[in-house]
Amino acid sequence: MDRISTFRAAVVALLMVVFALGNTVMAQQPAPPSPAASPSAAPSPAPVPPPAETKSPADAPTAEKAPPPAPPPPAPNVQTADPFGEEFTLEAKKVLVMKGTANWDAAFDTLIDAFKALTALIDKQGIKAAGNSMIVYTSTDDTGFTFLAQIPVDQDVKNLTKDMSMGKSPEGKALKFVHRGSYDNMDNTYEAITNHLDDKKLEAKDTFIEEYITDPLKTAEDKLVINVYVPLR
Image (cartoon, rainbow, N blue to C red; front, side):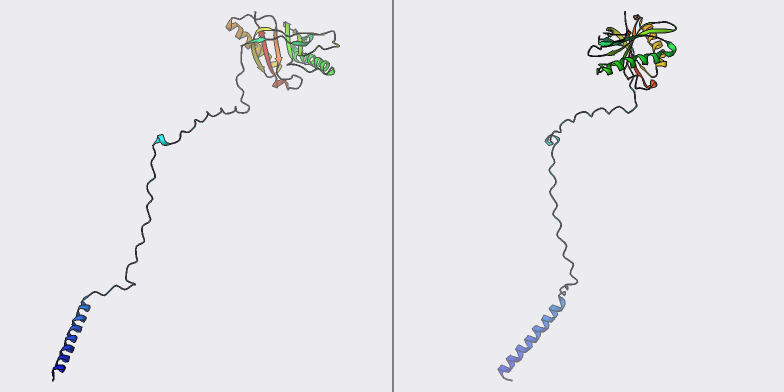
C-alpha cells in the first residue's frame, strides 16, 4: 500500500472513531422534552392594586347636623285632657240677647228654641254670627232657672221682639271648665266644678256662662262640647 492509500485509510478509521464517540455522547444526553409533555406556562399573576389610602377621621367631611325629627301627629280619635279650672279672662262682646225661663225637665229644648229664634232673626237680616252661642244663667232653683241666650254679632240687629235686646256679654276673671257630651250629663260637670271650688276655697258669683263650641242646632246632643265659665268674686 502506498503512502496516500495508507493516509486515506487512517483518516477513514479516525472518522469512524469520532462518529462512534459522538453517538455514545448523544445516547448519554437526556432527550429534549416533547411539546406535549412540557408543562403549560403558568399564567402571569394579576397585578395587586395598591392598598387604599387610609384617611384619619379628621380628613372626612363634616356632616351637617340634621334637624330633630318632627313629633309624630297625634293618633286619630285620641283626645287630650281638657283644662279643668283654668284661669281665664272673659272679654265683652256685642251680642243679640233673648231672655227666658225654663224648668229643668225641658231645659235643653228651651235653650234650643231660644237659639233658633235668635238665629232666624239674624239670618233674615243677612247678619252672620261673630262667635259661639252662649247661655248666661242669671238665677236657678230646684224647679228651673232664668237665662240669657246670646249670639255675638258685629252690628246692631233690628226688629227685635219684646224678649230680645242688644247687649254685652260678661267680662272679667273666671275659671274655665270643659264639658263633653249631652246636656243631661251637665250635672256631673257642675258637681265636679263645685268640688273644685270647695277644694281651692274659691267663691263664685251668682252667674255662670256656657259657651257652645259645637253648634247646638247642628250637633247631636251627645257630641256637644261646652266651655263653662265661672266668674269669681
